[in-house]
Image: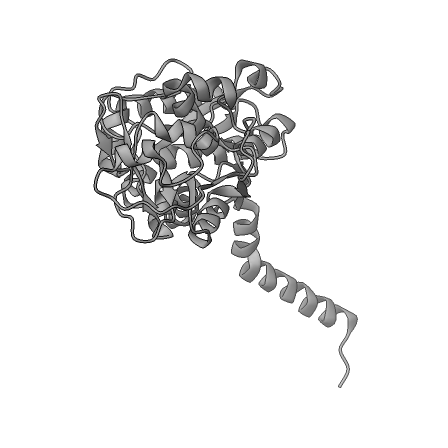
Length: 346
């Protein structure tokens, strides 16, 4: 059987048209797909991963990939412009903001507690005062049965075991929140170690873990270990958290309720940058975490995707905070943030 050229052309043409009709929606979906890349703080990582999953239920084409590499990494990548948004638990300094050529807006997304976690079999509800906690992480108190820790825990049998502090190996916003508190309440710690994302630890015997997960794993495996992690990591890893003293000298365990009490009186300035060093109420080692979004993006489509992401996070997304042990951002602040993002991001 022979086909003429005319007939063959008609068949091919018809097939192409039919294929275009069938594949058209697929090509359109690909063209409309929105992919955002974020990187930074590990403190909010469980929350951001949940956000990324949930946002697709309302916006199927919006795909968000967040890598937890530490706050210093998030700030560094934001400055370099290698991400669509960064994450940090230590708000960017003015000197860092000036380096962002496309401009940047700090978007507070959640707050939370930093737990002091420890591995001391047989010891529950450990209490650490405003005197002992800074001295442990400054290297002055070296053993668990030190008289000063005994004074905090009357009637508790503390072992004659060496204390093994566990700190972050990477530049960390969690470290900033923790050291900011210790530097606020202790002049010795402030002069010896200081506050920062990667302070000058002077400890002779110390373990270092990458990310909150790394610290949590090291504490869990090390008898006599003590470290600091986001409260949600402490819960997830079933680690014991110490009760620490607030400014009112009350020993308080970390919890969502206690974090809300501490952050309840915080006032957000125009740039949303806050450093909470101490608190009269609730649990005193608390802080906020921020997304860093640019004011200018390479395309209108990218800017629109970022706005869609931030608008969802600050409204519908906030309802997932409590379930993962994070505080919500006040509605009055949310309103201000969205106005800034929706008008300034281009």
